[in-house]
Length: 406
Image (tube, rainbow, N blue to C red; front, side, top):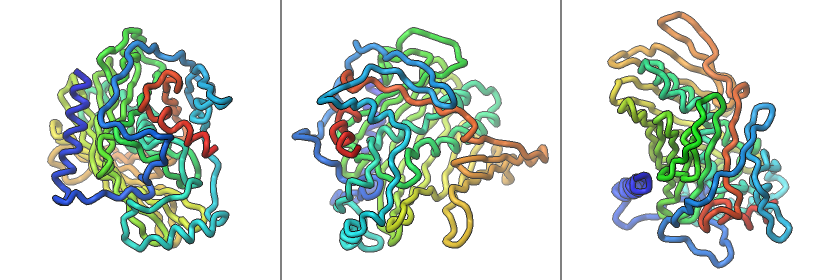
């Protein structure tokens, strides 16, 4: 059932974008978020999604102290290299473009302002050691915030909780203080993981027809697939079986050179579905920018995002604010949440998506902490050891590249 559903999502995502492109099927730009992939041996992009081995058991897990949960996994050694350990590192080494002056000068000589970056060869030192598909899993670094949506009986509370989860979903994806680019997935590449969530009822029964068939009903599971290469489209899906909540999304990343920065337009949408309530929340995605590419590059988000529930009529407008050229702060975000048919918001949210956000309730004349992402736990995704992964799972596909970038 699930596999057929994923196929429909993948095909509909690809079909939808095909309808918006020209008859010549012009190639979408890759650029900062999607450089052409580094070749891995003699491998080629598969044309179909490989079958998942449902006999693989779930890896043993444990909870790390402090604010992060981690998995205990059997090491995957090859030629003396622990490939799993390379992916488990929390942060990557920062970089300064000033140390690569000649390389950057050559790179800039290839591009013009407004140019798409499809055929621009990017230097390896700006690569982040993981696939774009794995980066999308960071939307669920706070899985407790996500599954709580389904627990709330009031539609007003649910739209607020959707905003809380969504606005907290971006900070965990930054593995470095500077901007780096994840690997561009090959066609047919997949990434699978899950999260254990303390404090909820335990259920050892596996969901054999779910997105990650060796996972249990009390775990949040995630599956991503690269469903198109030109244009580059990723589809990803998450579900919690017991909470009856899912999220399905597709994203096409278009990149352009903007002079001293690179802009990434994330085209697509995601849908939070509450199965038992027959309710959906449709969300869009902000743009991304790689700033100061000649010195120490850094990432910021910008643009308007809409969150709406067609069934209840509640909706929210979220604005990711870019830093002004002079003064101002980075990572600012604001949101206004509306009841059905109302022109004035019942709550306004302001702050930083990488830190503290506050909510002002207009009907209560009250201001309080909405969420502080630095004070809530990050739950690390649980990933099978590479030796147990299928041929086209992300970490296995890119393991040699990842080791070479160390």
